[in-house]
Length: 137
Image 1 (cartoon, rainbow, N blue to C red):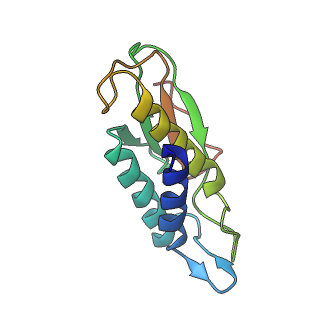
Image 2 (cartoon, helix red, strand yellow):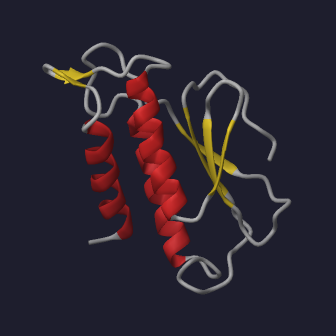
């Protein structure tokens, strides 16, 4: 199974274990349920050795830096809260692919945990609210 597929299936299952509410999922903004979903993403990012930070609004950032530490990050992500009884991909449709892409890049990048030297690209996974400003670093 590919790194991307493995990661997508695992992370979707882990996040979808949180907030199952009848025919859908409910993880209200800034609730304990949404925070638990953030914990899943934080755990996944930590397992990849990413740099993890949180801003004042509670946005979670996980960065895989490339060899050029001054290069800007490519920010990809979304929210992990849902509307009441939202669908299985509400919000996490942007967070999970970011996690999977970062996993695939880290597993195949030179200098990654697999042992080679990283390129100049950097990735950042973010979640909580799409309206907050993105950090410059």
